[in-house]
Amino acid sequence: MPYITQHKRIEIMQGKGSTTPGELNFTLTTLCSDYAGIPEHLDYTKINEIIGVLECIKLEFYRRVAIPFEEKKIQINGDVYHKGNCARSEIGRCTCED
Image (cartoon, rainbow, N blue to C red; front, side, top):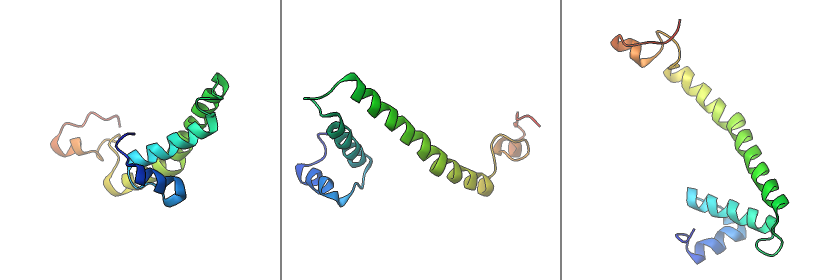
């Protein structure tokens, strides 16, 4: 993450938070690197643990945040998977199953 200035890196590490995707990436990378003990204490177990934790974080975030968000948007805009409720039906090109 060479695009994050040293000043901003210090602010993030002091707990001022991330405001861009790159800064979030830096924050998570720093946490993972610290946990892994890179490079002095790095081993396969640490790598495997970190990848597993990140995967669980991703899945939980999707379940708890993304799914409710998408369900709300379906209620507002309609579901693309149901005949008569998709944009293609408006132009006579819906191929959805009944």
